[in-house]
Image (cartoon, rainbow, N blue to C red; front, side):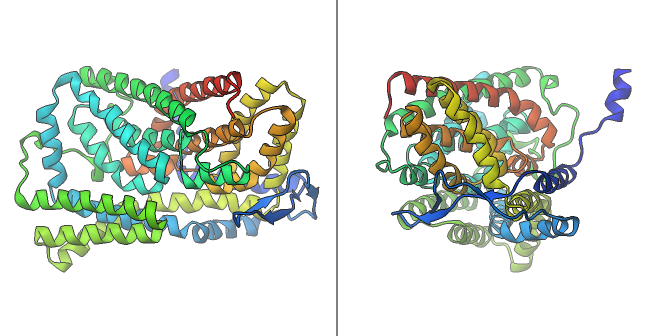
Length: 465
């Protein structure tokens, strides 16, 4: 009977799921009252809402034809991210095709044996977390998903382990960010707090989450290394672009391959420097990835047509993942057109004013996590929620630092699980079905939320301000 039920129920295709959410949001624009806050420019030049100014406005429900139009609108709205994913992945694809990656993994396999191989998990989660915490790396790490998937498979794990290294690294990094300009920087500016203030406690929170995420991932990795049938992907096929070479341990690094790795390392250093010093974003980063890919082609001696064929194949591999970004953004377009985002934020904030202080602080975290489903943008969520949460925290006797902490906790981690954020894209890049990723990540997501709640309680107990 259970086998029949399993055969009858199939998780819908991710496109179906996202379109379903778009339709639900369109229906919500007919049910929820339209409203908005007044907005002004603050001292930093950011447009923010004015707390206490929520007011109803004429309803602008989204009809059936407008709902379909929102899909195209979402593609346009997210075009910068879509093209970044495709171009950056194609460039990384050239580096993978060179075989330099295989040689590097082969060296790792010779150094780390048995269970000791799992040490790469906390190491790379920490490295990615630092990049995310300091300069705001998130989408920029997407091209490296297939690299870590290949490393994980070659070491006897599965694609989920490789995906988890990147997803947890950047998700935890955003959540525990010490100086991320897109989240903490923006939120502290709106809350009128000194830039980078309170970074010591944020680092403590970041370390706690890295420990929890790393232990959970290492336990899973070691378990499936000992018994592959324990893998959530056992019996399934990985996408061709993330399969590991069975002969990987025998690869050697030649001069060309070492030149490619040097190109990658130098490119990453330049990307970090440019982002930190000159505020580079997707356009500049995309250009750097293209340069790295083209230099790789020259080093390997590939002709223009051969290089173009490899790029075209990468574009084809990434088409599905890139379109997910546009569909997810269409949800935001519908909510924006229906003028109900401010209504939802206002409705979420009202119950907090009637709660005891310590409960209200924890509920701020929950609200920010849920809000990220509707506004999966760090700076966008800061602009909408912090002008409300900061003065509300004052009224409740909660420090504004705690309000900012709840915001960054809720914004960062949920990006790796909400279908409206980056969960579908990350899963597609790894060749993992979204439902398998959700099955693995949900327990550790709840553990990390619990860890965040403990950190919020500690902040309240010590009067962190």
